[in-house]
Image (cartoon, rainbow, N blue to C red; front, top):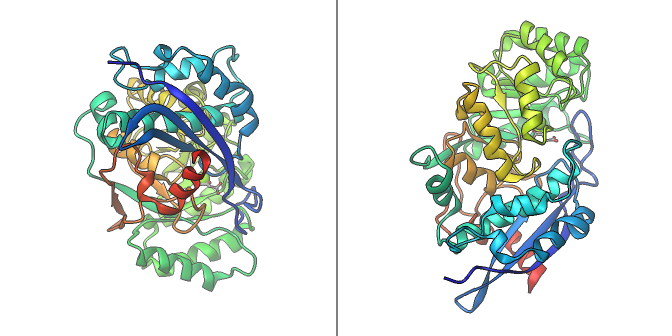
Length: 392
Ligand SMILES: O=C([O-])CC(=O)C(=O)O
Ligand SMILES: [Mg+2]
């Protein structure tokens, strides 16, 4: 068998912007990196290509990709990037090459750049093996039969110009009409009284059932405010209370976890295994109820996320307590293969990268996957068009 070779890596930037805001940022200028990793393996007259992009919330990382990550891969000997039997590329070995001469610590934009390429390498690896990624992952890294469908919740309820309670309720009705049972809205972009009105308005649509509503403060609150909100939110029995304070203020989170008896969710702004370990060590996270939202793509890719899952297992956490941030096809494969608790979804936002296959139907807040090889971007026409333009 000849070793598969990466012959080119194309990189670009696409807007995923909109007029929405959370408590911390506007998405007016949001964009993301897209990549195509082209192999020398030809199938049906075309090279097999892996595609990747970064989840919303962090901006494109073209400079780091162009100056450091991509050259290291292209300069590597192909045997350094492949499995031992040369049957396909090995994202874990490629990870070591991408991280050559990078000091530890200071995660963030670099972790996003590695994550974008990591997605493309997993897409390519599964395509070369002729399997949908969830099946390839379950065979190679799984803990049993993969889930055939995945819990998804509708993340929305953003602040937007001219958006009042009626529009918020209409948005939530739309989510329910699409098949979602659980929804999430933003808090912390208004004062507590106003946010409680928003919560009450949404609960009206949800038949008064707080367990179907999650709220997300996007790290806005200081400890006092987080506690004040916590006290006001507690009686609703919410699905979860997300990212109350600064993502790296573990001590504040631990204080809140002592006071707030409901589910807390956090982790979308933690970008490494070390960050995850600090979260477990210092943030008072409770394995019987809390949710870890680390986003594989923003945090050095699935190679690093597998290390995070190992760490969680060692510390007695079930993978069912992981529900990654991000809302796209890659995290859906990961959730199914590794039997996570579910996956995020943003109906209508962050296009063309966000969301699932064009044919995907959500029923009772669960969605299935397609059987196309790799991640199946080929089943999402507008996104596939963007990827194709990168290399044809
Ligand atoms: O508004 C955002 O940045 C996205 C977010 O927090 C989430 O999906 O949980
Ligand atoms: Mg969030």
